[in-house]
Each structure stands twice: as C-alpha cells, then as structure tokens.
Length: 234
Ligand code: C5P
Image (cartoon, rainbow, N blue to C red; front, side):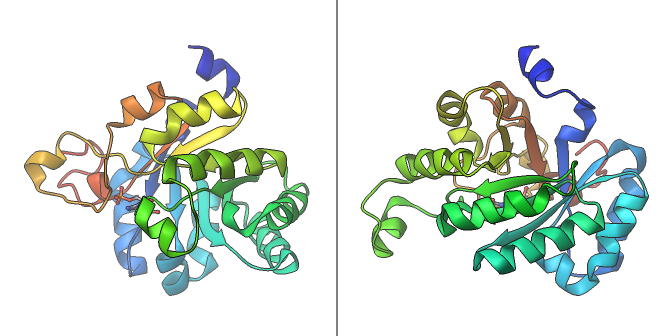
C-alpha cells in the first residue's frame, strides 16, 4: 500500500491505545492485559498528573512508543521547554495547539530537533467543538475550514503531523500532501454496540475507515480499554 511506503515502520505501532485513567494501577493493569498486543500508548494530562513522568518513562523502557498528549498552548519558551522535557523521557509524539500560532509550533519543532524520534503533532480543532462554538469565541468560520487552515499553518511551521477526527482525514490528506502524519482519535470498534461503551465523539469512525481516508495512526481509547477483553476489543 502506498501509504505504508510513505510512512515506513511497524504497522502495529500505528494503533495507539489511549490510557485515559485516573490511577496508575488502572493504567498498569490495562498495559499488563494488553501485553505484546499493544506497542503504542497515549498518555494524556489526567494520567500524567496522577502518575508523574515515571509511567511514560517506564513504557518507553519496556519498548513501547509513547505519545505524550500535552496539548501545549503557551509562550514559545515554555512550549520549547516542555517539548525538551518530553524528548528526554524518550517519547515519540507530543502535541501542541495549532491555535497558538506559527511561533509556538515552530518553537516546538526546533526543541524536538535534538530528539530524532520525537514528532510534533499539531491539534487543529478539538473534536467536541461545533461551528457555533467557533462563532462564540469570535471565529467567523466553520470547523471544516478551520481544521484545514490550521493544518496548513502547522505544515508551514514544520510540524510533523496533525491530530484530527477521521471525518477530516481525507480533506487533510488532500491539503497536506503525502508526507505529514495524520493521527485520528474518535474511532470506535463495532463491538461497542454490544458492550454499550459510549463516547462523546460527534461522528466516530471505524479505524479501517480512518486509515483509508488518509490517517497514518489511529488512537483507540475506551473501545478497547473498557472492553471485557482489551486485546481483542470484544
Ligand atoms: O473516545 P476514546 O476513549 O477512544 O478517546 C481516546 C482519545 O480521543 C482521548 O484520549 C482524547 O484525547 C480523544 N478524544 C477526542 N475527542 C473526543 C473524545 C476523545 O479527541 N470527543
């Protein structure tokens, strides 16, 4: 598949499991249950705050890829410092808000340059936001237009990829060309229908549909982590 040629590497590492837990114990139990079936994890602000950096460092030590979802939106100096700290942990992905503008994204990219495996991903529009939400903060545009606009800004600033919902992936792949990473949360597995797992994603998509639309990586959270058998999602 041409997509695989453009983004070489272990395909199993393109499925990123979101460890959205409020205790270290729950996160570690999920990692233990998944074992070798999972090779990439996302650690977000909730788990980072309760666990500290040690949990992410431990996953790196165990050979996992770690996406540290810091969602940085700060002055460039602070963003650069946080990216360097992430790089020293050995994580492979970190996020910065594209809404923060070119300078903070460029600062993140410059800071990441010392860590060859570290990719800077730009968040475009948080998936829970709607057109009226953008109007309420003074943006006279639609979510779809804003996502593409911010993704182009991210590319211009040197970011390695973007985070976007699966329904935006095709438009982004067309706008960004073949090289940028597109990482999509908002995927659900068919088994959710029977397990009753619900999420607040406005329009969730199957992971395969997200990849066909141009995603290079998919983030799966509760569909797997709250399933009776996380390794199979059933
Ligand atoms: O819904 P799920 O548990 O699969 O969420 C996995 C990740 O997707 C979360 O860690 C969050 O970063 C992201 N997410 C999102 N928009 C939502 C819900 C979750 O981007 N509405």
